[in-house]
Image 1: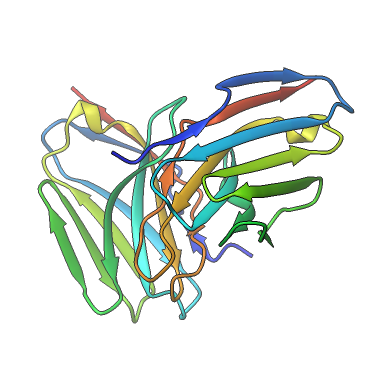
Image 2: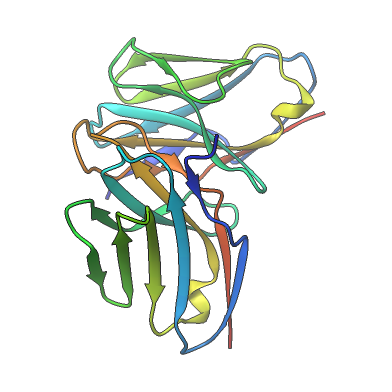
Length: 113
Length: 111
């Protein structure tokens, strides 16, 4: 069974704090992704990575950065959290190649106060 | 620019009847389409997919139809069950690139 694990289910942080969201997958997937889900907006891609130490901006990268030091781990960093970053954050992974589905973690509900 | 659109934010269906969820896309380069199901406080789970070389794919109670000329796909669930109540997202990709998701449709199946 594919397992994508996010370090926290719920987080509450203060405005201006630096926030780390961690994601680990156990299927040796090359691709890893960070999405956020907001009502009426669906899933929007923040950043993704095709390989270790490699990253690509998604559709909404502003205010975020990522780190991929090991193949199985992909971290999302909010450099200075703001209230408009309150959201559900979803990590996903997939094999590199055509016609492969992505597997998601359980999500992290982040509230910035 | 929303490349994948789900124009119905919600749908309510009687148990045992058919549920039809729709999805439209604008990017003609998309060649692989997927449906995901999401329960509250959980991550999305993969449901069914279809390649652009096909027009139909079936898996048990779930069938996905693709109309390339209309840039439209739909998910049929027959018969609908209360456990199918969830948010359904369609997604599309081009040549193994990243997935682009729609905004989701919340399905409620009434007992």
